[in-house]
Length: 387
Image (cartoon, rainbow, N blue to C red; front, side, top):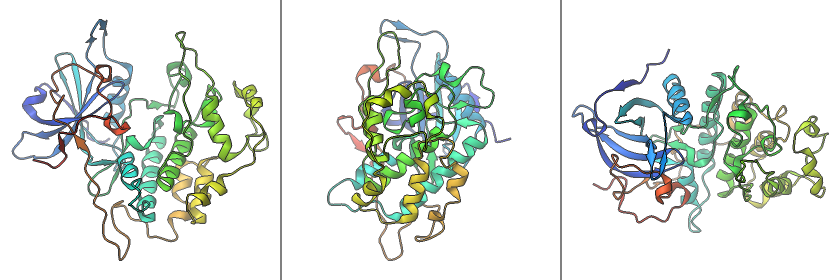
């Protein structure tokens, strides 16, 4: 049994000095903080869940997402899953205190996207991917689906250790109290959403996380999303639309899904929607060559992760044993370890903003504060590390 994060009755600002604001999302805001304990000058990320009242809207109780994330993070303990330090309840607000990560994959991808910079080195990609799969394997072995894997949710600490973060959409899939689809009709950010989800599957499996890992692998190679579709939003009646544009982006590269490639595809609720697409041959090999990738073992692994049929798709444990990690560049558990004869890359630290850094004030993304990890054009007051 891993050590349990304790619930503290001390006030958040008595225990932590708030350095600045990092980002906001659907369920709350995240701040960077430093311990006030003179014996512990560590840095932390504090997630504050949305308050019980915002403007004219009142909330009762604790959000389902907060309950799930607190329950799961309190039980999970693994080197490739972000560590929950403690939970603080203060004035009807919930604060989750996590270890602090200086980087995330989206930031690293953006850094290399600059035209004057090289592609992400193969040893870095190999290390990041193996550690990501290692964390996903641990989650799945413990009956946890993440359901929102994407570059912005994959953290990397200064020592090059990868940490899976943001378990707000995670669910236990062993004997759930209700079908997974009933609780959350839409999961996984659109560009990383598996085809079985796009086709309306009511009973999905851990394979949805492996599809997302495949999309992340492709993005590390190409420095852009492999399936960058436009999302059709739900209507006022909360009907889930068929994501035709996103499905089209997948078909352009992987070809048309057929019963030969995916034996049970005809059982998917939105199967009839596929009739509107013209037959297209697979183009993944062409795409791989066009982005300048040459490692054939890497292609085989990518192909195994982006299998249409979730039954044929590689599991996390199978992917960890793939020859891609055994041959070529040596696998390191430090994603920042440079290749032999090359200087290390100095990645900028996560942006931290002093404006809006009052953790006691209410507010979520409805206030207009954008998530910086998604490219919000906020005025930068200081960089992490500036004192």
